[in-house]
Length: 260
Image (cartoon, rainbow, N blue to C red; front, side, top):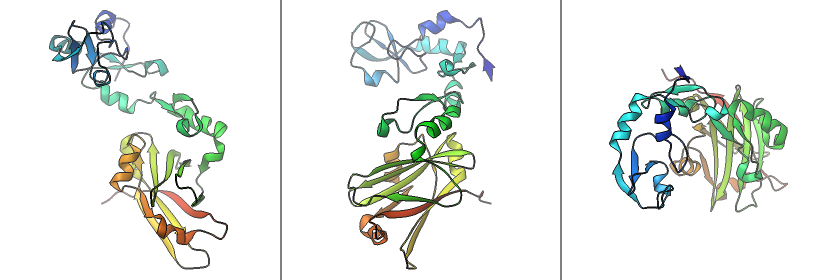
């Protein structure tokens, strides 16, 4: 682990600045027909060079790529407070787990909340601005689905074991999906599981499903499509609709015991 050095070669870093995203380029570095460089993230999004408007080529700048191995890169989260630098071989691994990585509010799409900051400040924001959709786990938590909504897209935040989890609820065609994702280092997601239970009132009939939580970094559609979540047809769940027309269920997050 290193910290930013005062004598870091700003001249070389300026040559590595992508004209598209203005971040420092990592290999592979490609070029346009005028010799301007472009990073591998920006190139698929562009039809022409942002510096000269000439066509982009399928040609790498190996000389510049070799120079990247002679310097340490500052973290892309430096504007949020990270002062670490790493070699080209380790900077990506650092940025994946950097504690200064910015988080957008999970209610960005649902409530158009434009908040963005580091993870340690997210809980206070959620409690102050979205308390109606935030739960602190104390045993099983009771939640409600509106079964009449054909385009259901629900969203909750749960705090348990001093960790944060996002709960996604969707109805797609004839199926209901519920997924719980862990907010934090991806390798810690498998340390937690969740149990979802539906019970018919005044009856022994019930459904209980358990899954391991997924990382918040995973695409939600892939979680749904892979089956790593709760998925049941509405025709089955509607048996559990209560007399007031609600579909009530209980959710509990638990720690997963290591397999021996």
